Length: 113
Length: 113
Image (cartoon, rainbow over all chains, first blue to last red; front, side):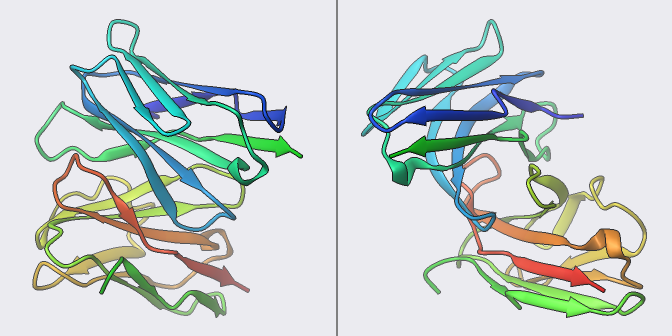
């Protein structure tokens, strides 16, 4: 079953606007990560937030984590056309020490110039 | 090398043939993941290696799929008797620890005709 689920599945905004994507997950986690994928190839790591953190910033990115609601959000401020990509959240399940990083289905973001 | 290297980058094969996909992780990374991504879809977990052992093979779609990792480094994913539904991009990622930032290769685009 899917551990992380992003919402919305697709998002289209004008350049300069903010983009918000959400991620929900099901079990206890050690950390939550956000990745970006351009053109259906390799993913690039954006940011990692640990389970004891509530908010983290990196440039124009702001990530929040609410472990009580099992959810996270990724905010991209002042979006640019180059931000057009698919964004995935990934969680490391704490059920067992050998569990794996699970990715959600992703949010496809289109930033219109 | 500087990053995760996958080969070949593209592979076209006839239905029924066997294919072997290779992943060269970043030196020193003990965790290695294989994912599959169909067009416009999220990442489907296939298998996870910690060192040379694969504690979690639960994602392998059928017994036609197998993977190994030798010397705690290079991994090969083998698909026997390929089917058209095997067509996808196969992504490999490695990380220093199981729950750390994952570095992705550019993937192998497999097309079964």
